[in-house]
Amino acid sequence: MIIVENRFTTIEKSATFGYMANRPREHNQIRGITWDHPRAYRCLEASSRAFEAEHGVSVAWDRRSLQAFADVPIQSLVEEYDLVVLDHPHVAQIARSRCLRSLPFPSDADISSLGGSLESYVWDDALWAYPIDAACQMAVRRPDLCAGIPPTWEEILSGTASKIKPIVPLLPVDAFDTFLSLVASLGEVRLPHSDKEFVSSTNGLRALKTLKALYKMGPAEATRWNPIRALEALATTDEFRFSPCLFGYINYARPRFRDKTLAYSQLPRFDGAGPSRGILGGAGLGVSATMSRPDLGIAFAQWVASEPIQSGVYLENDGQPAHRRTWRTKGAETNYSGFLSGAFPAMETAWTRPRDVWFLGLVDDVCAVIDNFFHKDRNEEEFLRDMNKMYRGRLAEGSE
Image 1 (cartoon, rainbow, N blue to C red):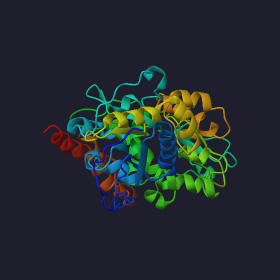
Image 2 (tube, helix red, strand yellow):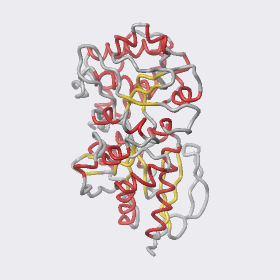
Image 3 (cartoon, rainbow, N blue to C red):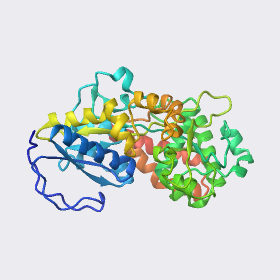
Image 4 (cartoon, helix red, strand yellow):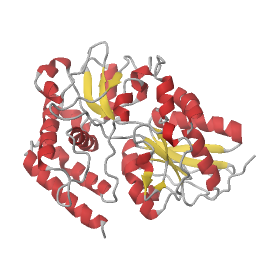
């Protein structure tokens, strides 16, 4: 049996992380932190039990909220945790601080990476996490209520879509993510646009007008909904029939997970523009730079990201795999086809948002004011000017 050295004696309670507890570190235990949804923890807990049975090393998991997953700096976690499940926009900050260890590139990278999932964790020519969960913004519908989703944004916004009741989650961070997907779908995939503008006026205004129209088509409370809340409404009520844009969760495509099963597909496109491009999401698994036995952390991360585990115990326990071969080989199975087959085109064309050190600060700034854009019906031109001003401020900070 391999013994993991003990680095900590207690874990302090934290309202931010929710599930932490004061308890001693087991002598032969690696500790990791993920986020609080079955898609994020059940698959890792099951995989960890299998890893312990095979290798004699225990991996225990704490959970933090979905908001903390997006917001909390990785640097604040690595002194308490050996393994961190993270969001790829953090990679520039990780590379600057070196709070995680750079990892060996997978030997099967040419067949394992789905869309840009692997590449999204590369910065400064180093790999900072292995993709274990793949996601992007995509469309979703109730097959029993909605035969198909209008293929273009223009059709959705024309008014006929009101008969099929669309819903878009517009919690500030999700509203900003949808804005980015709209901009990318208009063909502007190189962001920032310049050192003065985060996004061009033409595409920024068209995306904001589309976003405002989507808000006006749905309930006002959608500005308090994240994708999970929207998916719950779709799967457990008949109030809505489809969402043209949200981050997909495999759980809701599984039979018997909820009252109704959902099916996923590519985002609508804009007339006169190219293919739709939903922003890339998902999660990667990184190894703390302070871990006393990094070989064990790397071994587990490689193991859980491998195709046999992704296609087996990980997928079978509510996991949303990141291995491309898993999506291709398991996509025809009834339990997974509504997601793995339906969402595959969206994943292959997913667009990676900026990951520079200034970007997360810009996200915070925009999210702090975007509610006023909806509830106070702020002018799109004014809001875009404010966004670009925020961008210039964060860009200046990031260059210091």
